Image (cartoon, rainbow, N blue to C red; front, top):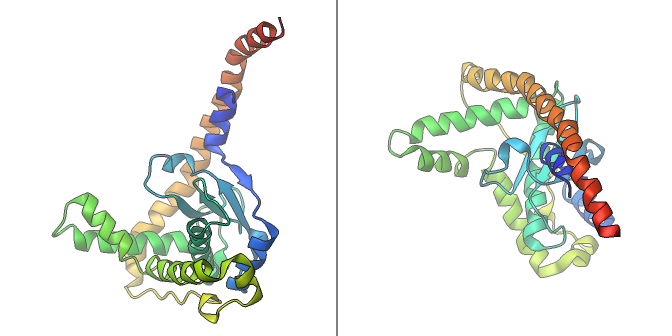
Length: 236
């Protein structure tokens, strides 16, 4: 693949389509989700290329309602791969329950609440732990992550035993989630830092992506003579 193409897809990962049977199963697992608003991508966002995460659910940057799920090399039919998708879709359910998941670009209630909960836990754990460990504790004990992991665990156990066809034929009730049940337990004033960061990212992210995108045609022009030379050499 040309460097210009690699740069483009590192900024905007390729969209992938899940298999019809996988979509059918996921629709049964999450009967209240609108899958027309959910998009799947192969690869992590550019600002998370070196993060530990293998999946993340983010708002669509250039729309008012879309939810993007990024997966790092996920096998749809494997227990771990499908479990990861189920986990990320649980966050999609949380998006839906927080003002319908609507907003302007990254300015969605889910991100505000998620960041707020994370910073509260991070601050608590920094008293006794170094930053890396405190950050891990904040993630592991996050009230929006714990139920997602619990649902993922329950799903993987059943999927491992029944397989895709068995789950489609008789989906266990414990694998169905029609609501996430998240409740914010702190003062609304605690939402201010999360709101500021979310708004800042909503404004800055498109600008950074535009600047990165400007390098794609420049790189393509520089590559062109080398590509033509390589093509002529191969044909000779």
